[in-house]
Amino acid sequence: MSEQGLKESRLYLNKSNIHKVEPPILGIDYGTKNIGVAITDKKGVVAQPLTTIKVKGGNYEKFFSELLKIIEDYEIKTLVLGIPQAFKEDHLQNISHVLEFQCSIKKMTGREVFLYDESYSTSDSYSMLRTQGQNQKKSRQKIDRIAASRFLQELIDFKNRENE
Image 1 (spheres, rainbow, N blue to C red):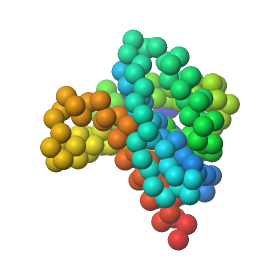
Image 2: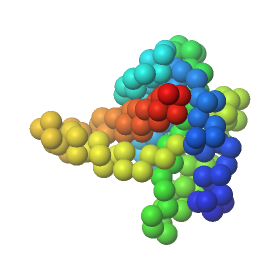
Image 3: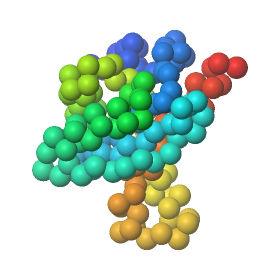
């Protein structure tokens, strides 16, 4: 699927379908080693980092087990998966992996999984942690869940602007 076709997809969140997002919302930052998870409050005003789930070696069973528990424990209504933009040719492969992961989440949970632009969320999160004086090694353990909370907060702010 081309990037333009993806953005026109009914599952890529934009002005035309943002109304489908109901809190609490779970944000997922996909990675091949770690998956960051963030959550909103019940009113959908504030996003906060929740956890980072290690999936090194392609073992996603732990992620899916924890995902189902989180959905139940927090009464999640909407799932949002971060997807990068294709700035370079090699980004297309990452997008392909994210789309496959989206299908797996839908199959496992029986729910729609919306996509939202997560470009720069990881690098912005690293910058934020460095300005707080944290070194890169310690930051690595937090970065994925913080990145998930950053793009989830952007989504919430976008939704609130559209509702005004």
